[in-house]
Length: 226
Image (cartoon, rainbow, N blue to C red; front, side, top):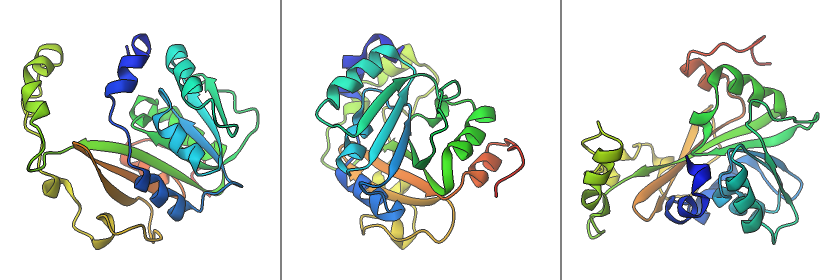
């Protein structure tokens, strides 16, 4: 579906604030010596921010038109390569990475293959980071979602709360290191960091292995995690 309208997707899809990638870089130690694999790069919204950190980025995208637009968007960077494939069928050619990033895309990956594949393509103690956005309401912002709720119900029925997103304070975790106070080194898997963006709250969860996320989905992993 998205592959049929890549320019429209690129124009209306919420992006991610620069501060979120600065947090991600600080937590994982990403720099110009790091290798990053991005799964499901779409039109390259997160790809450009990753490339701006100076690390080498291999971005995998199954949609040919989406991948083509991503290549145009990141043409000014010489440290990025976009490959057209699903993650499950992608030929890694023996490459291993320091960080795997998926920005609002991991839900498209088959969990029975994806978690193990993620583990396999990461270096030992490599990082996995899942990025996303949550639609929120803030005082003073236009009621965009209320004005388009009828369209959402028409084309994607069954979500009556679409026009009334939760207030930002209602979706924030209460621990001190998850607000806009800068990153802190994670002491346990699944450390979450949040940043504000227009109409959304951007976040990522990051861990040195994906075993606990695989367990959360009820997915077994071959041989476990060492």
